[in-house]
Image (cartoon, rainbow, N blue to C red; front, side, top):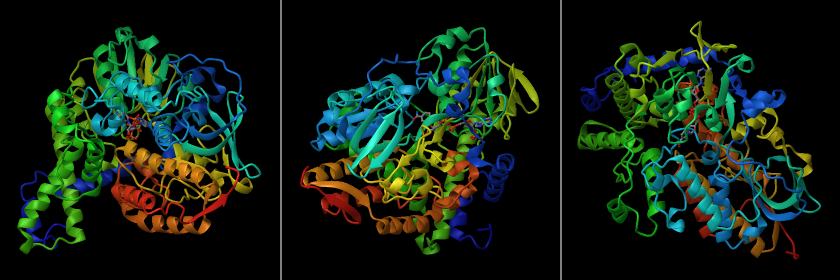
Length: 633
Ligand code: NDP
């Protein structure tokens, strides 16, 4: 919509005081996106998978080593378990816990994880400053069941890991768990109606059901730049922080860096938390930035008894809070009370305020979809303007401050919140190297960017992770193996043109196989809520099957086709937004392909959760499913 007569007068009145020109900002967003896309037309194919690069290189393989727990030798397994849960992060823990709540014997549930313990993200990611970026009371699951109150609004990694361990302890999930074990093969055996499982520990066992976490963000990736293997200094990925080299621990104190020149590549959500610690200790820190993150106020604080008494005591408080967060951040319902009151909910609070003002002017304005979408765009611009102003206010060097200003819509990338990140750039030992084209290459001595070589002793890669299910596009699943269903069908082949599921958690031809956080369902800022809703649903199905003597659950081809048709029909809107975005993992690095993005959704999160809950309460969980019964079970 162009400025002028096409914009309703009441809307223009609302926009009169804004300190920027909407069209100019929009043009700047497009420009910034386009320069990044031009250089990286290969999308997410630009990245180098660390596990793959490490295959022929012992030094790189060491970068993937588990630094936290020694590997304990054990004999290979050849038994049969009721449920195999692949991945022991929040998804797997919730699946296990909800199964136990449904009456499944914990000894018959096997958690399997490449890590040395439960915790997933919070097992591996122990970089200094690691903390959750959604408030703990909403993010950390099962707090009421555990009778546990997090110590801070945004908890740090040690507490997040401890809390994961508490879930495993409470529900007996350690009894049959296999750590430091990676699945290397998964094949459906029709004659026995079981999954045959092989692992890198020589195991060859069977499972009646498999619950799979592809690992939303687990496989470390490196920047698409040549020469990593040539670098002669020290290097590591943030998810395998090397405290032997840096000194210190998750709280900081990286004293071994006092004489070192350190580079960090990437300025996403991880780097935002790491940079203040590196800046405080490195002799010199060079931060290589391709796209700045939006960094707003964090305002972390300790949990007080008063806060607990007035917010966290009524039974059902956590679900209410989770729903509140999700409703406010993702469903855009005006007038909802904000229980969270943080940066995530601020943008929607502002938007709501505009709706209220507009309602007062209702006689002057038709609230049609074009007006609403313009309002949302402008509200987003206002939020991003305040983020840019914050950078300018905090960072004293004007050039650096300008480079730290993000030019895209807030939800194109994960918004960040931190109170020490921006001030770090005022330190004399910290330098920002900004190049929207990214680093050029890595040499024996350091990093080349903007045509200049920066010599360093150590490179920290804060370049993120591969999205688990997207590995299927390269002909295999995470871990380098395939999942073989009925009639020898490979999941990677079935999904070669994009995922095909029924309600995101199941897929035709792969019986008794359930997925968590796969595409084609919904997307939540708070991933954990989706993991839990799926865990509750799938554990209900598994327990019901046992009660009713059902041995095979396979979504029918027809039901899956109908679901996928709906997904493709509905995915247009989210994908239109993503196409406008600066590249990142939300939009497959700018390669938005219908049905393949994270935004290929059936609907909003609350709507999706209600769909699952309704199926359970109305006893329709088996609608559209091909079932096989056995008298034996
Ligand atoms: P991201 O994928 O978000 O960030 C990777 C960074 O590397 C980006 O800044 C990217 O730039 C940069 N990069 C990639 N290639 C190059 C290159 N060639 N040259 C220079 N820079 C490059 O990874 P993170 O580990 O930061 O975060 C991943 C996700 O993990 C987050 O989005 C969040 O969901 C989660 N997370 C959650 C936390 C929490 O709850 N506390 C904390 C940390 C992470 P560009 O933007 O241009 O692509």
